[in-house]
Length: 145
Image (tube, rainbow, N blue to C red; front, side, top):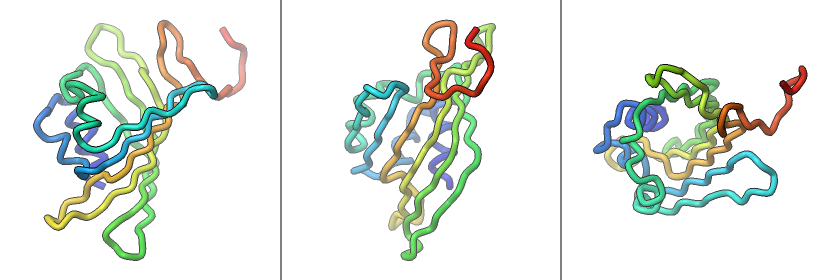
């Protein structure tokens, strides 16, 4: 699905004038960070998303890797639910590091102009770099050194 890749590339390559086109005007983004006691952050509408993430495409120094994409096309053929995994990697500062990883669950819709856009994006961050370690909600065995 084009908006998944286009959004990631706009942020990674600092293409500030195109990332808004990845979303519908009334899009909703739900961001869940690690920690069972944390409430999700809800962003409403393209302007709400832009206000919450100033200069989203100006961050630079990072790469998004998106994988394990599953597309469930809805019966109307003009919308779909897309499940995927992401890893956000910091690069170019002399030390490449995993910044965060998790899941996207997206609802995409086909616009009248023939372009797919994100109408809803739920971001679940499973782990993220806080200082020198990854904060992780899931243990994968081994000791905790």
